[in-house]
Image (cartoon, rainbow, N blue to C red; front, side, top):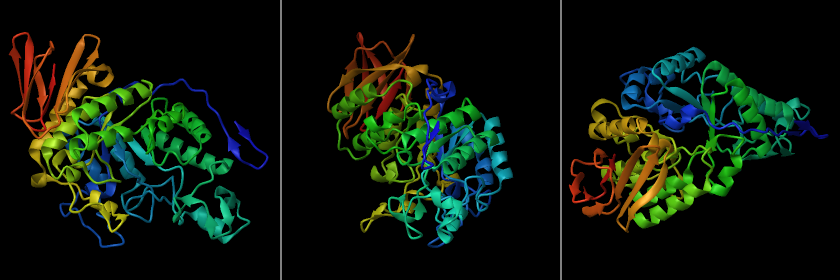
Length: 463
């Protein structure tokens, strides 16, 4: 660690420490706290613009832990719960408090303890790059050019011109080169790990410089050796792997795009998807965490872009859960939550379209929920799906079949990406259909081969 003459702060951290062992078995559920539940039957109470709050709470999440346990997830990723002027929370006014609209620190502690009792870990969304222009020390920095907080930011012309997140004036960028600012951020991460959380999803992780993550890694691993940190890097693989050693990994945006192109949009056929997987998997070291997902809070929901076709959603999920990265389920995807309109309207993104309130009770798609339950339970019991090598067994323009093998265990995944029913004969030893997207999916002996019959957009896992 060094401090330059101008007060800039640099660090390096030599680390050969892989992600904790528990992360290999993680099934992550992303919860938008304001959109999930509040414990009140009148939920959601949707406020008008500019608020758009739905009044979900931390207690509401605690109240629904039995539901999440029934689904089978074992790791909850919460979007920001810090004080914030917005409903989404990605513009914090403090890294050390809880948004009173969502609850109290006592409520958060109760959620953590109850989640742990249900066998679930808690990940917090963390934004080290920027915060709200209503943050108290930013207000002081603007009001007084002699304030010690001025150096926490990069003012080009004080007080009105400063570095921001993508030019958004309400989101001043934190000068993480400045030691006091960096320490404030890393100490906040340590604070919440000590409080009981199990790790972080780092928003816009490409903002801070790599040496920041050397400090961040040292701080988080010291505070909790079994903590897990992965980032949001909407970048190609060569950029993502630069975070190795600073974080445990990053969300797999390249796989996201491939899954949506293949199963939702129909832009790719099975052969193109197979070629992508071969290239993509060869690029990353095995130690690099790559949580997979079909949608999130910054894009149209998968079911919307698939035009409401749950067959396509099931097929994409079957594929997602058969690949190595820890699968992430965006709240509501498992029960058919979609959206009323496309997110892009008149040239701008209206993110609220993809952040509708959670569906409960009779509004839920029970068949889809049961499919996700079976898929999660099967993955939990199969090391081959979490750690096994993958090899292509069969591929043409319509169908892709691959095997995941680990030690003496193997599972074959067969995916029909076309709108036509198909039958293929595979030279495989695996014979028992374990999970299928439809009752029409069949696996039968055909001499020395196995005949796999799949409806349109159908898929199976065979053991």
